[in-house]
Image (cartoon, rainbow over all chains, first blue to last red):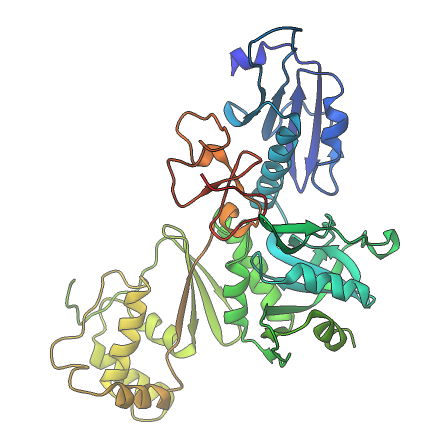
Length: 270
Length: 176
């Protein structure tokens, strides 16, 4: 670490997000302007010198006519997260690692992989794995009048509230090299800014042509579904179990196979 | 596999949360979560290492107010044992549960309201996320380069942004 510390750091930033203190430093001035755009939602600048995790971005100075390959490198403490000639890859790797770190280690909140929308002052949470069709469903719900909370994580606390974590919705559609993503625009006034109490948890998967006939799910089964999508369950099982227990005991949970997203949207937003 | 007639429930390394009619149990060492229904929990609580299976069946009969076959307790114990919630794996003695059809057993279990033990393996943060995990999880020397980073782990695919995707993820990924 001392060797890394000796590099000439041009700029640095300490911030807190979800109870974690994180530091990012770079050898090149101007890098942090780009980094600010990929920080976790709700981050706040802090002045502490000690942080829980430090990321170091090393950007080399390229001399003209030099044949030496100079890589951009991203470290988490001493671990190399990425080494690349393309600087954008550094930011992508940083964004991904930051999201995983915050979601897995958050002090108070529980991050569950899933999507959230708001409707009449209550949150509707859709826990689910990737490719379960939750982004399509969220896009349809927002189009039908719901408020957008999140497309990636449902951030919940022990008081039964869900927090906004608005990152851009990414809808996949078949493409030549697997899948392509498109990003529908959401008007600013439809993006949630404050937490709301959770009104309902919906466990659903997409099947073409299926009809939406949800059934009430038992609290125990609902808890297992939440745990199987919880980001912090392994790192902090006590906190996660406490929040899960509170949620499934106080919030109705529906389960079912859904067909087209707009039909479900019409059913849920009544 | 010990053939114990005095089952003992596991106490250490568990996080237990009570729900209305069910109980959630988290195994800290194996990262497994279980959901036990009322009957399973009742049997589990009787497993103190001193009470025999026939005694548990007798107590259960008293508790439910209806006749309970010892086979029912064995079914419950087998399920709890399979979930790792007993100190030692338990195997019914020969003659018990043998020669009975599955349908007969299920009927007996249904008469006590069923014995439910559901288990899941709780994922790590990276497994639960759709985001791909960083290459450093898959490579030896800590250096990540396209096409090289996931060679040590054939289950993962190297993707264009120096990350190793989980199986099933195809967005932006290329094969090694």
